[in-house]
Image (cartoon, rainbow, N blue to C red; front, side, top):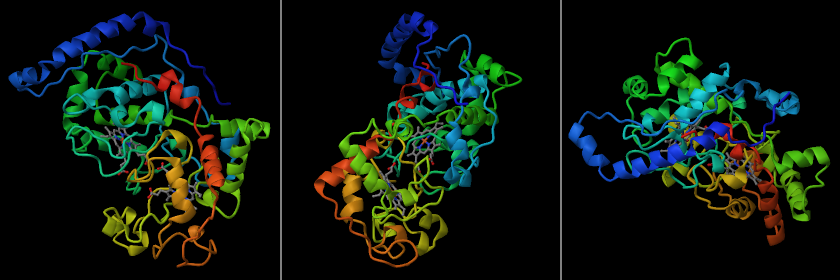
Amino acid sequence: MPTFYSQQIPEQKLATAWLVMLAAVGVIWLGSCGKEESEQHGSGEVEQSLVPQLPSVPFEYSLLGFPEEWLTDPALQLFGNIGSDIGITDDGATLGRVLFYDPILSSDGAVSCASCHSQANAFADDAPHSIGVSGVPTERNAMGLFNFRYQRRFFWDMRTVGLEEQVLEPIAHPDEMALNLEDLPGRLAAQSYYPELFGAAFESTDVTVERVASALTQFLMSMRSYSSRYDAGRVNGFVNFSESELAGKSIFFNGDSRCNQCHSGLNLFSNQPFINGLEVDYEAAGDGGIGELSGDPFDDGRFKTVSLRNIGLTAPYMHDGRFSSLREVVDFYADDIQHHPFLDERLGVSGFGTPGQAPFQLTLSDEERMALVDFLNTFNDTLMTSSWWLSDPF
Ligand code: HEC
Ligand code: HEC
């Protein structure tokens, strides 16, 4: 059985709020001379001035589950249980939560995972390209993070296999957190709060790169999203839907739009990457996706088919964040799909089975386009984005 929790702020957190405020004043004061200071010491050592505020009894991450229906959904069984098989413990995921929000994991002590993956945006970035330590924008858009039980390959070009592998990449990436992984254990062990957190999560207080990867993975595996108005509608026969949302739902699921042929099942995604026709020649346009890895024209512009859950919260859209609104996405699918030589057949005039077709034209009226946008917004989670156990503990 899944466990649902209402949003609550642990008392301890309230009681110490004033302390955090004092600490914040300290940060501002330090900030005015902080740069000079670290240059003076020249040691490259960075110390975190805040400490995480955690409940005295850890949240029961280990009890979080997916609804029964997810565990039996045929489409999900197809992709089923391919995510990390790492065991989630309450103390392990708690440590992962602290690590996820801690800027100490970056070389300059200023960038955390959450700098680019914000909870309010279902852990996506609201900028088309993210800015990390180097100030050089990332090449691609930071997508939302959730439902990793059903995912094994990561990034828009699906280059990394396994969440435990993935979580270390942003730490070392020169434009993201730029911290040498060899320096990571020492950096963490020097913070007052980590030895105890590692001790609770693992058998000893030793800080290792593998333990960091495990704890972050446990926390990411706890980002589960299945509570939306769409889910409520599926139970109550959609009495909670407006006329427009109902009209949008028919467009999404009718065979003409083919949306659900790729964004399918309860997670509204696919673990197959597709070419959805943003460009005639992606490589020439600057990003060939999987094609850049395989060198095969058949893969030019093939990208991960991300979930449409929370889609109203994760703007801007596509691998490069080119569309700033869902209306722009719908306009693209309705009349601007490009005639790529390997455009997926589901987006061609006669559908799946005939290769090399011209793109379809959906001929949707203005009202129908608005209806589809309204329906897409019903996928927004009403729980994950406000759950305190996924929020910033600092
Ligand atoms: C500077 C911004 C930045 C920071 C910091 C950052 N990320 Fe990301 N993240 C991105 C971008 C951009 C992508 C997409 C990159 C791509 O596909 O090539 C991404 C992708 C991901 C993905 C892949 C999701 C999927 O569906 O394939 C995961 C998981 C992830 N990040 C976790 C993390 C974790 C954990 C941290 C901290 C250790 C972190 N990120 C720090 C920008 C960032
Ligand atoms: C052939 C499979 C396919 C079909 C059919 C399809 N999509 Fe997509 N969709 C994709 C792929 C692949 C991406 C990512 C492409 C990229 O970023 O380059 C995507 C991206 C998106 C995104 C942006 C996701 C994000 O987080 O940035 C939205 C929104 C979307 N699709 C909605 C729809 C709607 C609405 C329809 C029906 C009109 C539809 N899709 C039909 C494969 C498909």
